[in-house]
Image 1 (cartoon, rainbow, N blue to C red):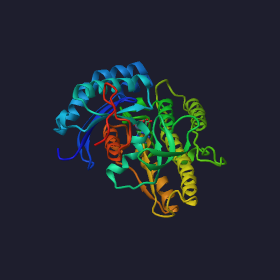
Image 2: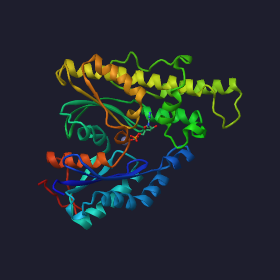
Image 3: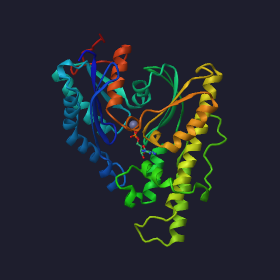
Image 4: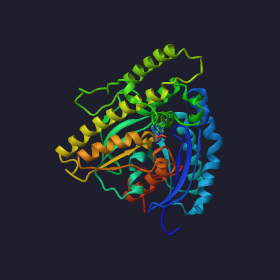
Amino acid sequence: CPHRAVLGIETSCDDTAAAVVDETGNILGEAIHSQTEVHLKTGGIIPPVAQQLHRENIQRIVQEALSASRVPPGELAAVATTTMPGLALSLGVGLSFSLQLVGQWKKPFIPIHHMEAHALTIRLTDRVEFPFLVLLISGGHCLLALVRSVSDFLLLGKSLDIAPGDMLDKVARRLALAKHPECAAMSGGRAIEHLAKRGNRLHFDLTPPMHRAKNCDFSFSGLQHVIDRIVTRKEREEGLEPGQVLSSAPDIAAAAQHAIACHLAKRTHRALLFCQQRGLLPPSNAALVVSGGVASNFYIRKALEIVADATQCALLCPPPRLCTDNGVMIAWNGIERLRAGVGILYDAEGVRYEPR
Ligand code: KG4
Ligand code: ZN
């Protein structure tokens, strides 16, 4: 391989993922094992179960990514692995497996911050220069940050309670969408997006949260409880048998999706104006990057497009498969850190490596 290549490993939540990416952004090999189906059956992620599944799959997934890349382990420039934030038991599987590899192969090790990896993915797919604003919306996180370099993130806002993906997952569970024939094996967010397409959001009046708060923070649990009460009321009205799906589920899904989209759009608008007025972002042609699992929702993207137009920004989203958790973003963050010469690069014995 003429360019430096990094093996990236991700096990922070419920995906076991690995990829080999080179300096020019070529994805040389990738593999992923999703645990979604198992966790849907138990109604949420049970950490020891996630840990066990990571253990069962990590060897195969890393091997698949490596074989596809045709890069011999000896020619890798480094191994990069998510070390935070995430479920401690899940993170531990990726970390100990990686440390074993770097010990065996005598390679530098690059610890990766999962959210930073989501934020920088866009630099692999589009040539986005620093600084840019990023909105990260997933099942576990919700934040707005100004990205000034590979390792310089200014946090502008975060969720005060749950993340939008978590809210979508909870609403989907409350609506029993896992039992819906069209939504089998879909994440909560995808199931809501799917059903919302034929729903009428105007049947339910949901006020976007925090409309008076003069900051860029988010809140979703109030909205989720309002929807909970609506579902309870509708279940009574429709006289549902246990396990049946409400006939008004598409309308509820559409209203929930719309309320989330409005809330995300308003807070992001505030953040963009804040940065532009203070010279932290250029007054026009700044990049608004949206990533994380929820960013694969096209209705939410459309709302953010309106915000981008109003502030003369360019809205950029990685392709959906790079928005959800994956190994490519971890490997790419490793490449970014190698190129910038930042990040603590240790081998298994704790010997510090300097980037070449
Ligand atoms: O980034 P991700 O794969 O994992 C986390 O770091 O959380 O995001 C997963 C989240 C889940 O909550 C899932 O319901 C949501 O992203 N999601 C979606 C869509 N696809 C996945 N939310 C809204 N619309 C979608 N199409
Ligand atoms: Zn994620």
